[in-house]
Structure formats: C-alpha cells, structure tokens
Image 1 (tube, rainbow, N blue to C red):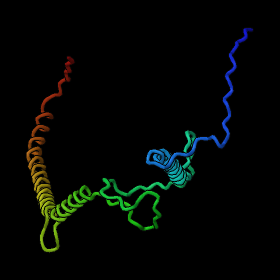
Image 2: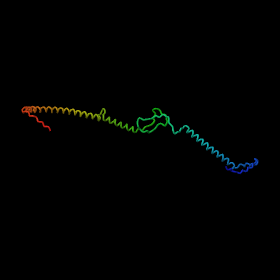
Image 3: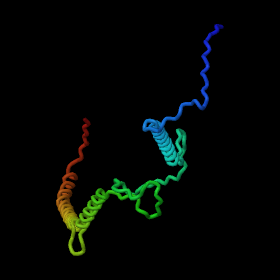
Image 4: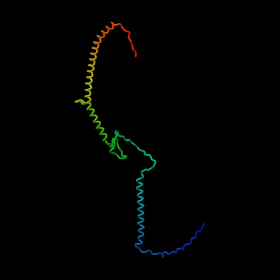
Length: 200
C-alpha cells in the first residue's frame, strides 16, 4: 500500500466572542436574502402541496376501479330479441339502467314493416275483387258461371253425340240387314271353295 502524506493545516486562531464582528445595520441588501429564502420555501411548499393534492384526487378517483390483465366478469346477461327484424332508430335506456317488464327499450324503424302492411292490404283487396262481394260478382264468380255454362254445353254435346250414335246404329242395322240376307242367299247357292291363306 502506498501512504499518502498530507500536510497538516494550520489551526485557525480562535477569536473571543467579544472580538466577533458586530452585526451590520439592517440594509435592504441584508433583508433580501432572507426574503428570497422565504419565497423559495413557499414555492417549494406550494409544489409539494399541489403534488399531494393531485395524488389524493387521483387515488380517490381510482380506488374503486380494479384493473387486471386476467379477469372474469360475473353478471347477469339477458338477451333481448325482437319478434320482427328491423333497424334500431332510438335507444331509450342507458347502460346499467334498471328497467321493468313492459318498458320500451328501443324504437325500431318501421318503414319496411309499413311497406309489408301495404302489400298485404293490396293482396287482400285483389283477393276480394276476384271473389266478389254480396252485391256484385267478382272474377272468380264470373269464372264459375263460365265453367257452369261450359259444363252445360258439354252435357248437351254429350246428349247430341249419344243421339247421333243411336241414329247411326239404327242406320247401320237397316243397311246391314238387307245386305246380310242377300249375301246369305248368294252363299247358299254357290258351293263353298277352300279358303286360301297367304302368309307374307
């Protein structure tokens, strides 16, 4: 190890209290350092108090807020499903607001539903016009009348066809009877010839 040598310092001579320098009379220069020190202390105190106040307000605001990266929520979830499909135009409740049964929660856009209603009313009017009313015949009643007339015409046509068939049958009997009796006479007069059959 190396020793470091330092020279001893000479001792300061002590001055008796009676020989102490007399305080200077108060002048503006002597008062200024004490006022500047007070201002520094006040500014430092104000900064410390402001920081403490900010910290207290921050702590009070966040003391009931729990933050975590791995959490689960335990709550009651109630799904709400409308009976019709439509866009939502207004929401009448706020988040976490208590509601009672029957309260209106949202208002739906009813333009599509109004169009469907008008279409259904038009379809109903068309069906009524086709079916007809009490005082007037509709299209379906007219079609029914036409079908009945056509059926009556078909029945009369069948009757006429049956009459023509009976007439034709009677005419056939009259014509066949004389021809048949004359052909029988002719056959009995001629000897019967052997029948020839040709097969192709």
